[in-house]
Image (tube, rainbow, N blue to C red; front, side):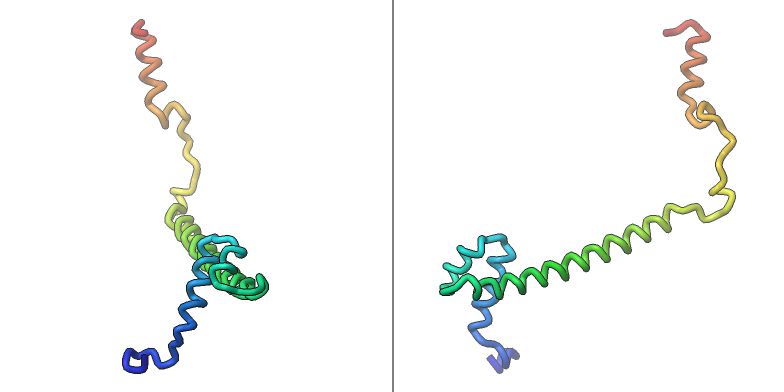
Length: 111
């Protein structure tokens, strides 16, 4: 293991990783307890608490990422010039030419 660059590696660590992964995958704790060979569910719960803290940390990271993206999106959609922020004096008919066409068509007697 030292030659591989893993001087502190223990094969028992693989067992803990497997148990943590089973819990993270949603396998019921009673099933994980049986797979791991734990005599008591309280031993398995030690790994579940570790998984809970990892999930809480992942949630914090995701929330932070979403908040940053929302802030960036708001900045990109805000007007850059004061005149762009002013409301227009145009009427809804001016903004959408479709009602004008409809009115013109009606005036010609076309339905």
